[in-house]
Amino acid sequence: MLPTNTHILYPEFDYHAPTTLYEVTELLAQYGDSARVMAGGTDLLVQMKMERRQPSQVISLMHVNALQGISQNGSLDIGATTSIQEIHRRLPQLYALAEACNGFSSIQIMYMATLGGNLCNASPASDSAPPLLTYDARVTLKSKTAERVLPLERFFLGPGKTAMQPDELLAQISIPAPLPHSGSAFIKISRVVADISQVCAAARLTREGNTIRDARIALGSVAPTPVRAAGAERDLIGETFSPALAEKIGKQAAQEISPISDVRATREYRQQVAAVIVRDALLRAWERAQ
Amino acid sequence: MNPKLVTLSVNHRTHHVALNPNTTLLSALRDLGYTDVKSGCEKGDCGACTVLVNGIAVNACLQLAWLAEGQDILTVAGLGSSDQPHPLQTAFADFGAAQCGFCTPGMIMSAKALLDERPQPTEAEMRKALSGNLCRCTGYARIFEAIEHAAKQLNVDSRG
Ligand SMILES: Cc1cc2nc3c(=O)[nH]c(=O)nc-3n(C[C@H](O)[C@H](O)[C@H](O)COP(=O)(O)OP(=O)(O)OC[C@H]3O[C@@H](n4cnc5c(N)ncnc54)[C@H](O)[C@@H]3O)c2cc1C
Ligand code: FES
Ligand code: FES
Image (tube, rainbow over all chains, first blue to last red; front, top):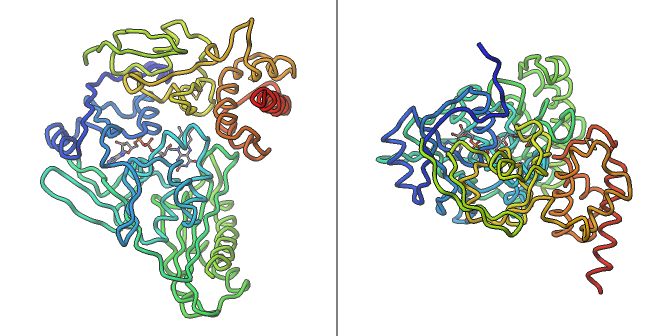
């Protein structure tokens, strides 16, 4: 077999440019597995150049206005094709998410990449997933005939695998209104700024005086999907916050994950660094939860 | 897969070209003769293919040409001419910010997008704006110096 020449976009496809959600779902119903929706294309086009994916139908989402933008209806609703750059600019108060979007590779990619694409690509290294997990985000999936809402935690099934059916698309990401006195933070460790993470972690804390009322911890690049450290979260709730507690919980969260070694980092490195960045994310989140 | 007649507006010129849907903006531009736009990694990593689409820096290698229909595309050749170079182009030459020159068109376009938005960028803003552009020759220091100088020059020019 010839080696893949990534300089050529070899796969041939028909390109569809629907302007309404309904048209998108109709096309998905018609073409099923042979179709692929394209948002920013920053993952999909790379995969197509490497001939890992060869959809015969590409359905662009970028002409559907209804999928674009941020609105507040009790919850915060983010359209699937809202760009990473726009989220970074418009939602600074969601510290963890804004920090994740800011650390997202380069300016070019921040403008092109979408939030929905980042989740649907289902990479364990998705930067937006850990913050969204700590916010208890929900995703709205639409097909021609039905609509369902899933907690984001149940959306990820494995590397590149989600709970979406071939005739479904991700329409919206919703974040419940934050509890008062909540704060969050995101920390990413990568070889160079413009690379995906070796390990990343997000934390959200809600305080009542010096007591932790609610807690979430989520990590990326340490498991087949972005994951929560549920045991560590449980051990925070009801406790009095202290740097020593953050240190202990960081170590505990690192014990809950079982990362692999790959080109970006070894298993041991990931585990050690996870303990440190979970601790630091907890410290920052607590400071912000005034 | 059928080609379509696409109208591309590049450096204020209009082109009508028949393109297949699997043509990237990068290969469309280079085929049209805009070889100032470089093809490096073709995967969004190196920034050599950076052009401005409606003023925003994008990787032309990860954009389908059909999507660029009717948009305003600017490449480094559209910034200035040899007789009347853009202050960024002058500064890159004067400060030795180009060695082999392969990264330069993309660097200048990323810098242009930055200065359009932030006429007096901080060091951190400059680093962020160029984090998607790799250079294997200069070590970046002279590139930052050139951009800083061009920014000053542009601010003087705009004050008249
Ligand atoms: C140079 C470079 C640097 C990168 N750096 C980072 C980084 O730092 N952090 C990070 O997390 N990622 C990074 N990425 C990966 C990528 O940019 C992100 O995952 C991005 O958010 C993908 O969004 P997109 O809109 O481009 O997705 P696309 O490529 O358009 O789509 C990705 C996948 O999701 C599917 N899809 C997209 N939208 C929907 C939808 N609404 N419903 C159903 N399916 C959908 C597509 O069919 C495709 O399979 C980087 C990529 C590149 C090329
Ligand atoms: S060629 Fe487009 S980023 Fe490298
Ligand atoms: S001058 Fe050679 S790569 Fe930058």
